[in-house]
Structures are given as structure tokens and as C-alpha cells.
Image (tube, rainbow, N blue to C red; front, side, top):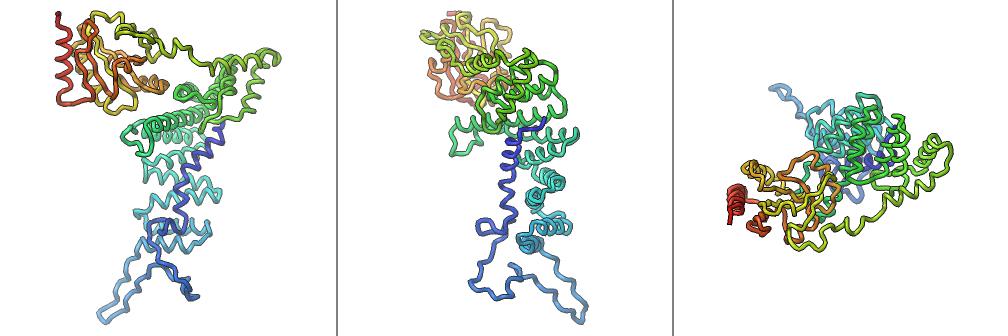
Amino acid sequence: MRPNSTLTRALLAAALFSAACLIASTCNGSSAFGFQQEPQQSSPPAKAASKTTTPIQKSPPATTAGTRQPAAPDPETELQMAIESAGTDRAAFVRNLEDYLKRFPDSPRNAAIYRALVEAELQLHESEKALQYAELAVKASPDDTSLLLLAANLLEEQGGDENLQRAIGYVGQVLVIVEKTTIDDKPARDSEAEWRAQQNGAEMTLHLMRGKYQSERHAYDAAISDLQTSYKLSPNPAAAMELGEIAELQKKPDQAIEQYLIAFVLPSQEGATVDRAEVRKKLGNMWQQAHGSQTGLGERILETYDRINQQPKSSEADPNKGAKDPFSFVLRRPDGSGSVKMADQRGKVVVLDFWATWCTPCRQSEPMLEQVGKMFASSSDIVFLALNSEEDRTRVAPYLAKEKVAGTPVFADGMDEFMDVRSLPTIIVLDRDGKISYRSEGVDPDTFVASLAQAILLAAKPK
């Protein structure tokens, strides 16, 4: 199965955007590699066009004391000459830069040169040479996500198990970089909601890419895992399409039909588009094989559309409407298992930790909360709950699959509003009567453990 061509072109375009500037003769008044350009003369002499921007120092004449060695060539000047002398001839541009790299293998400009060569080789339809320079660029700039994705796409185009494994590795590197990005790295112009949406979209696309590459290697278990994660992060037709194709290859017609139905009814998303005509063809073929005709397929498509797009019932959207006290709440678990009924905690001391996946201070507080939890691990009447206050709940289960939180993870389900939680993390201790005996907004590493432990002990004392 080949990756979606639209996705590949989009990723390549993003990766090459900054490289395009490198091959231009000037960029905002400076050369592409950082050289300042001299002002052009209004009426330059005919011979002036052959002169370089920066004059080259001639070697001094020989003296009676002997012949002096010529001055070492200046790498910056030589690079500028290599770029300018190529003019608009892309092949000459490649030759000049390759010659420059042989002469100056340790130039500090090498990372930019490699990237410019990738762009030029792609324009010349030399994909193998483009891949060669892309991987050299990755070695020079291992944290450049656009280069990593570009190298991954070029490797996938070359095909072969070894190339696909390297491509998967590069996508994995980008995924690690994205996952390590915190809200503190958010651009000032973006809101938290916009930033989280971008993060979610990036993770969705990366898992989708890696899943496709794994599928091409016939590593179907790994592919299914990535594709399901992509779909959980944001239901998208491309992941469903790939899952359908794998199910079809594995002779699982019912699963293939279900996934093709989902791919057909879901709207397209940026980075995860599908050819709906192709999906319809695959769906029709599988339905024909399973049922002997197309009868009933239309009804099944409508049923799938209604199911995928149905609005949750009001009782499901707000299970705690009208709750009068903390023990009236029923808190759902992110894994979909049985809910936690706060009524069952009546008479116990309950520690409520309000958190979110994007909250950096929440992550910093986890080791300290775990430390406090261990202090009271043998006390069955002291309960720790980690209440997620996420706006996008689809992020929580994948996060918990990789990260642990102190206490039983549940959704806040309105208790954050009931408790007037305005910042994260917020820690609240309820005494045996359900009254707030301790509240902490934010975390002071020097006092957090001691103050929370003392608060729990006081709340647990018989009255």
C-alpha cells in the first residue's frame, strides 16, 4: 500500500519551504547563506558583472627573501562565488556546491548546503541524490523535524525494507520531539486551545505516517497499533482506510467493511485525506464478496453515518447535572471501564488532583503526589483521585497509555466547576464529611509533600 499522495506532497512541501530560500541568490537583502549583498550600481560598467561581491586578495609578489605562500581561500567568499556563478542553472548550482563541500568539508554552512542540495536534486528529479543529502542534513541537524520528515518520505519512495525501517525511525524521532513539546513552547500568538489542536493534529498525522510505513513492511501488528492511535487522537478517514486494507489482506471481510464504511462517511481532514471514489470501490468490492450483491449497502452506509455523527445524549454529556455535594458525583474513567461513584467514598478522606495532559506543572507534581500516596498506601480509608479537566478527552487515554498519574484516573465530569477550580494543578482534600479541609493551587516543591501529608493526617483524625 502506497501512502496517500496528497499527504506525501503536503509533508514534502512543508519540509522544503525553508529550503527554497537557500537556493535563491538573495533573501531579504542578504545572500541565502547569510552574506550581505553590496548595493547594485545604477549603471555598472560592462566588465563589472564578472567581479565578485567581495574582492579577493591577490598573492603578494615574490621578494628576494623568497616566495610568500598565497593567502588561504576564505570559505565564506568562496561559497558566495559558487552560488553566484551558477546563476539560474540548477545543475551548475549542484556542481558548484558539491565542489565547495570537497574543498571545505568542515564548513559551518554545511547543514544549509545539504538542504539546498536536496531541493535542487528534487527539482532535477534526482531522488536518490536528494535522499543522500537529506540524510546528511539530518545528521547535521538532528532536531529539524521538516528534514526528518523529508528524509522519511524520500526513503519510503525508494522502497525496500531497510529504507522503510529508517523512514519509520525518522518519523519516530519527530514524534518524540512533538510529544516533548510543552505548553511553555507555545507561540505567544496562539491560544492554548489552538496549540493543543496543533499538537493533536501533528501526533495524529505522525502515527498515521508510521502506521502506513509499517503496513508497507507487512508489520501489521505495529501498523494497526499506530493507526488505531491516530484514529483515537482524531477520528480520520485515512487511518480507517488503512485499517480496512490491512483487514482485507488478513482475510477479515467484516472488519474491512466496517473500516471502509467509516473511511467513507468521515469528512476529510488536513493531512489525512482519502480518495472517496477509491474507498467506495473497495467498500463495494468487499460488500459484493460478502453478500453476493450490493443490496443493503446503502442502508449500512446511512447507519454508519448516523452512528459516527450522532450527538451524545444530554445525560451522557452531563451525568452530574444537579449534583448538590461532592459525594453526589459519578466520575467516568478514561479507559471506559466502570465509573467511580463518589457516594462509595463517603466517610473516607478523598484527595482530588485536578490535572490536564498539556499542563507542565501537573507533570512536575506527579512524583510528589506519588510520594505522598506511598505514605498512605496501607490506609484503605484514604483515596487518591486524578481528575482530568481536559477539553479534548480523546487525548487522555493515549497519554495514560504512556504516562502514569498518581491516584485513580477519572474525568472531572463537572466537579472542577463545582469546586471552582480555576488553575491547574489544584489539589483538594475532602474530609470524611465531604468538606474541603485543604486546597492548593500550583505546586511549591519545597513544601508540597509535607503540607499535603499533614493535611491528610488532620482530615483523617476522628472528630
